[in-house]
Image (cartoon, rainbow, N blue to C red; front, side, top):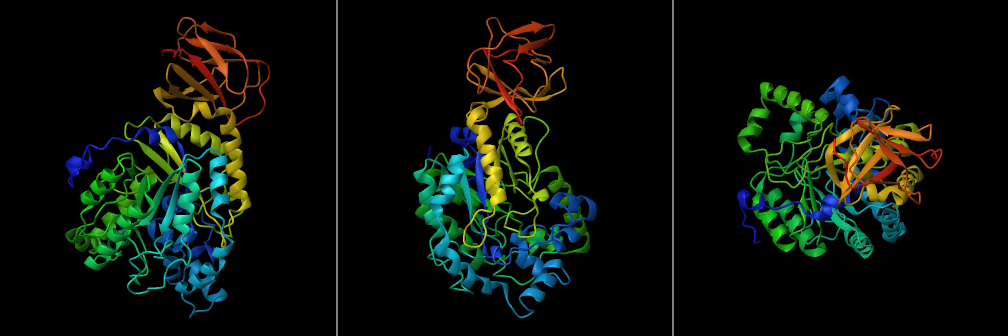
Length: 484
């Protein structure tokens, strides 16, 4: 269909099958922050700090290394102390551009794409411009205040080609509402998130021009905005333009526009208190932005849901506490391979995708600990991917065996996948509250042949082929699907 530039029209856009089927994508945060590569890590992750200490403490002790410039502007912050000691009080963040550009000759987009393809990712979302405003492609719309503030190599184009050549979908993140190269005031809390972005018509045209340029030049499948969108913009026109060019494209939920009257209110004492209270509650619950615009899916950050969601969603998170590379992080800060496997299984069972972040170092090297985590997940998917890719949620997401092992369910065609979140000790498992259909066939992914099974009261008893090897999860296939 031809989409009109109205909310009513773009809201008719269906979530395409490829995105439902994909389940696993790679996020990439690579910006000038990879030069200092520093954020404090000792206060906990972003949710922990927010729960224990609140929004002001979160911004002053931001564990996201890609927020380095904002943290630098907060008086007395750990980043400011670090920067003054290492680089001096008069060394501006923007001067990191020279070192970043000097390192671009080392970067190999094929190495990234081979890694992502090899671990089973179906799509990639690349940060083309983060909040620091540095552009990673040669735009025809240079920064009006800093015309040379961009990568000297077409990073976006190089990665896009490498990703598409390997059959993966390509998407672009762009920091729409925030651009610290246009502003000087730091963001100290959630209220500032709503009012400290550039709000004039010049910036609105700059941001929209970049989005249209990215669409026209690189033909993405995903538009991933963050924090919001500048006022005075016609979002529905942008969405219609994208969908009419690429009907199977998708857009995320982070496009909310804060109108001028709301900005005035948020700047008042009462408005600031209310904005911080609501923002804290929303973020902890997984709602990173109020969904006031059209979107194809929502994006809880470092959060998941406890039930199947009708609305498509995507959990977005780093492997550690930061998205951008942080040299301070230690192995204990990173999600383990078993945790990562079980996280993906849980998300998929509830109608979600996992967008897992990679934060490359200066020069483009993917840190070894991140590469190791990805390869571990990929090795599990090599055996069990049929229970993940192309599936849909079942009647319920969660269950348990009589032996006390957690279970998740996914479905595909006439089959149900029962995924054990652990390794049973014996040679029999019994799935609670499930009735097998007549002539049920049971298989274990990674094992040849059928398994014995029988109805045991209200449960299904499955005979294993022997003691199972230790694994974060084991996937069984029942055909036809049972009933509860």
